[in-house]
Amino acid sequence: MTEKPAKTTARATTPRGSLNRRRILDAVAATVAEKGVDAVTMRAIATELKVDPMALYRHFRDKDALLAAFVDDVFAEIGPPEKTGVEGAKELARQYFRALVAHPGLVNITLEHALDSPHQLLMGERIYRGMLDAGYDIETAVMVFSGLQRFVLGSALMYPRRTDPEDLPGWNRVRGRFRDLDPEQFPTLRQVNEQVPRMNQEEVFGRWLDWIFDPPGSRAAGA
Image (cartoon, rainbow, N blue to C red; front, side, top):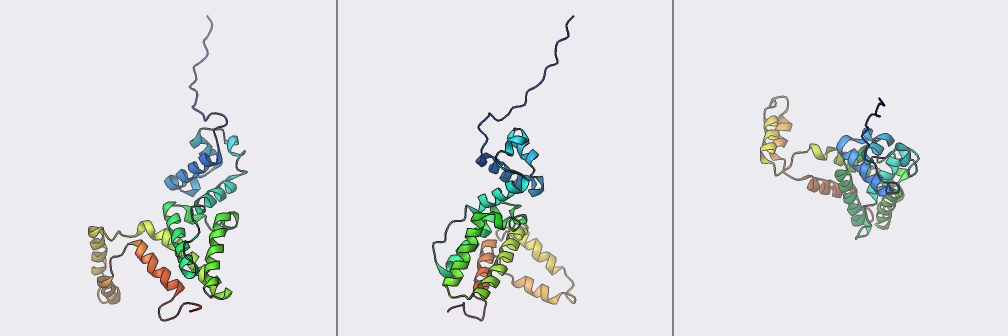
């Protein structure tokens, strides 16, 4: 009696020729959003797309190139500002912040791939151009840009951990915790807590952005 070969279940695969850069980057974006940057490997993305890992190497030389392309793809969403000078620089900073918030995990790799991202470099070019056109000297522009990057990255990192001002029960819980502090040890924190205005993160970001470019008690550069 002839033994029949065991049945195998064929894995669904992506048809030859249908894999492209757009599909790969979309898979990277989904993986970063759902599992974090550390979950991105050539094999993991290939599995997600149901292709052989070697197929990805025809588009990207390695994982670093893949992540650099992902970073640049996100920064490509940041268009030129409608305004000029400092207001244009602020507009770009807001786009920068929103791009990072929309793509969780990007904040961890954006600076690592800054020089590999033409669109990220273009954003920097435009921000610097706005400051120089407004009358900033180069040293001041460099210091402002350095502080701006730290502020934007930090704001995006904190964004999901902040309490929504429309969430009144959540806001009251936070205030209640401050009210429970020892009044002798933390009198100032308790005092400030009672007067903190309820603002959303866009409002907080906008107010700090104004202070970065025009600190309280000083005039904007070139004014």
